[in-house]
Length: 196
Ligand SMILES: [Fe+2]
Ligand SMILES: [Fe+2]
Image (cartoon, rainbow, N blue to C red; front, side):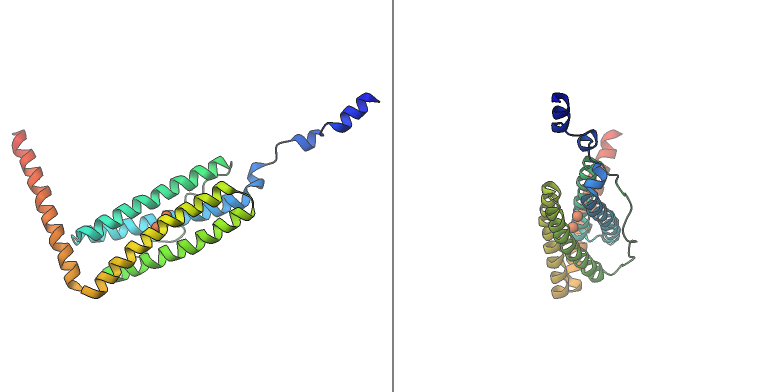
């Protein structure tokens, strides 16, 4: 009788089995993978813009796009780490093809749209993660939103300057880019002469 009572009090084997983490965290894993696809595509888009700005020697725009692309790449890493912690697998594929936009104003307009859309999506993802009692994923999205808002602010300011000052703004950037190229050339020539 005692044995029966003990066995009744003890949880059954089925009840103690570890719940399938993938199923338990399915919602968070899907939200994170969706975000990863977006971050990959955004990184590639910004690297494309960076290459064009670099080629045109728009020194500041080129650096801004490079730095923000690196920030987006870090987001891929952070979201991926979380997916793996939740025992899911990472879907490392871009969510859209890189747009071949070569006009600086159009590039910045598209970057503003991208950031705005990302912020809206992550706000929703953060809310859903919270509903599913996943506080860390909820916070990860919240922290990322703060960074995306800083990107949005930067792109808006650059677009505003470009619309206000037009080609003069680009000429100024080009001038700074040429000076930077001159300095880099100077350094490499000095290095070459020292090595002789
Ligand atoms: Fe991002
Ligand atoms: Fe961003």
